[in-house]
Length: 419
Image (cartoon, rainbow, N blue to C red; front, side, top):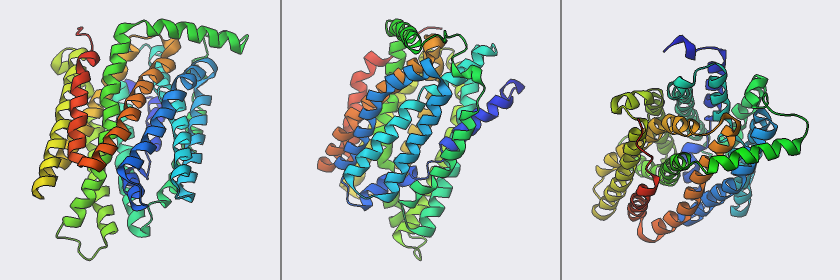
């Protein structure tokens, strides 16, 4: 990798992503919800609450970050996450979980777009705009490596304690460390160095004016729609991997001396570890796909189409397994889910580059927050619908329905083909 990437701030950006992705609960959260008696529909409602809350909070928190400081916004994000984790650890109640999801959404809203805006600000200050895909791809690779490490640690915790809830408590530790990391970023990344500091109201009006201009940019909006369609659908579909892995673990004719939960912990931990090692490589090498296609827009459209195809195939193969009982199909299903994870992480640096090239640095956090808002809105609408369909007709039919819906929206989400 070129030396330009490995300056001090590169490592701090990478550390942020590594610590942020130590979500020890993530590989097991659906299994946790199922273990305490929640149905797929109820889980879908919880996901929808989180997504809808994020949708409502996304824009004001993005404007807040652009107007009053991105570092402050990031610190508030991690504090919200920590309060959410505490509720998940202490309680076992659907309504308390709903409150925890709202706090989690507040953390997401303060964070999404804001840290990417800080990276883009840093690249602009250092005249490195032409390296957006490579630079962000490499910092995101550190995040995915964090997820890989996270999977092994989470599996070890569940294996030794047999307790899904405790992983929420332990997740507070890396998030506390990340508060210190992002809270001490250089002041110039706060996005405030070109602002008139004479009044908060004036700052807000200036941000809103620039933001309104961004909303009239059709190319930027289509880029956001493209990103949100894939990412929002991915947020819904990825949840069904955990029950598949549990079924796979229980059906294995090995490790019979372990309990079902211990076998599940081993299989889930190892699978997610390798998934995130692969997604780390995918993020790092995202720019190579652009070079191969010769066109950023073409690469973005092609990977969206690939995501639609894989989601539909996952549903078809799962339906076949549900109807025939042929267990070897489960390996195909796991492979398809891995392909979705890889596509997600190949696409992310490309999406961020495409959108950031079409909005001003002054409203970068707001613009990237709008993209995240659209993603969460898509997921909020789809999660309970797909969850309810899964309860009624099975997960296979639910994923086929999701693939069909994505295909129907592709024409309005494809970005303009520009060199």
